[in-house]
Every structure is written in C-alpha cells, then in structure tokens.
Image (cartoon, rainbow, N blue to C red; front, side):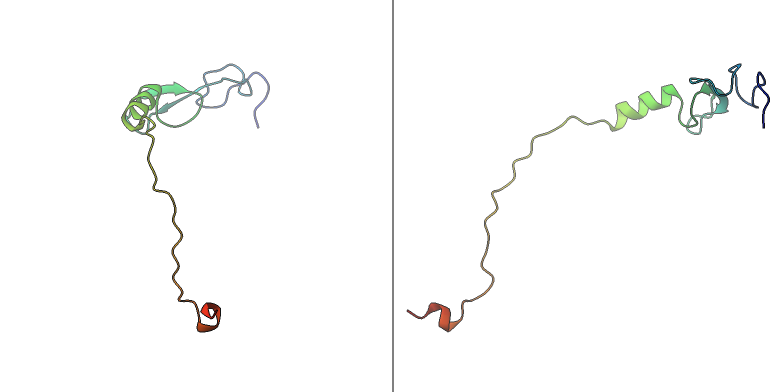
Length: 80
C-alpha cells in the first residue's frame, strides 16, 4: 500500500492514481526503453504494425444462393 504523494516503482507521474500516468519499461517488440501508459509495443512499433497489417476494404461478389433438392420425392407425393 502506498501513502499519498509517493510514487510506485516505475511510475514517472507524481500521483500513481492520476489518469495518464506512465511507467518506464522495455518495449517487448524492439527492446527500446520507453515511457508509456500501458505495457505493450511502443508508439513506433504500433505505427509500423498498423502500416504492415492494415488492408483496404474490398467488395466481394458472392454468387446468389440457389437451393438444391437432395432428396428424391416419394411415389405418393408424385402421384396425380
């Protein structure tokens, strides 16, 4: 438990409960020392990943569904 006014280890903000406080850690992708709010890839890695894996939307033509009869009707149903 921390006392008011003290920072938790790794916190650069003066108030650990402050929204937007950041912590220092090593980026798990590029191994650079960064100060981010949440643990994960740094800003540069996130931009690179977004540029690499983002694709433009493409309209795809789908053939119209045509139901197929897989059963042969019985003799009583075909009787006139």
